[in-house]
Image (tube, rainbow, N blue to C red):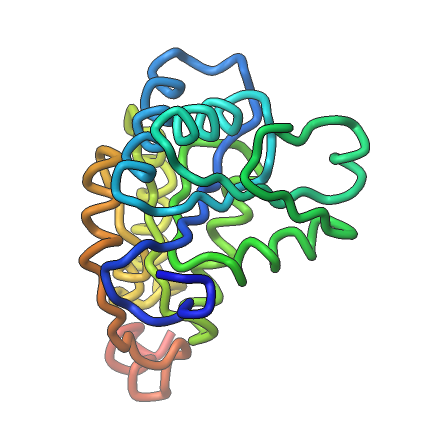
Length: 213
């Protein structure tokens, strides 16, 4: 998919936003899987949109994609760029005024989103795009790459939110949980948006599902 064609859902090259960690202290398996993801995105002819970092899982993702002939676009706020944290070998770099505009730029550029294991920033970023999808602000694919079962406790918390009626059951379909990079990209390549209904419970819903409580 060309940049001018974003928002359509055909199987040509896409901009895939990857949220991942800058930590270099994580287990080797996370580095192996993020490299596999970078290679697989490049192999399928897609472009990576990510946070521009040269360190940790972010740096490993970018390097693996480039080694496989892929394009990597970084988006970084000015204060982090001034600290020299941006990868110098990126296909292109967007420098934004702050963190909030960084997220908006990444979201605008992306045709789909993959969250890899990460910390506060990664979780905040993927939950924002899932929430925007729930509110009907976009209809793009959202994937959790569940390396080593990292997201299992998070998925359990979402299941509890559904059981306690904080989240409607159909909203589990807002995102897909993938066991491997190939599964994540198969889902994105085949993805078709579908309506999931109104976010808010109606009075009838409350009476039926929550028993009036």
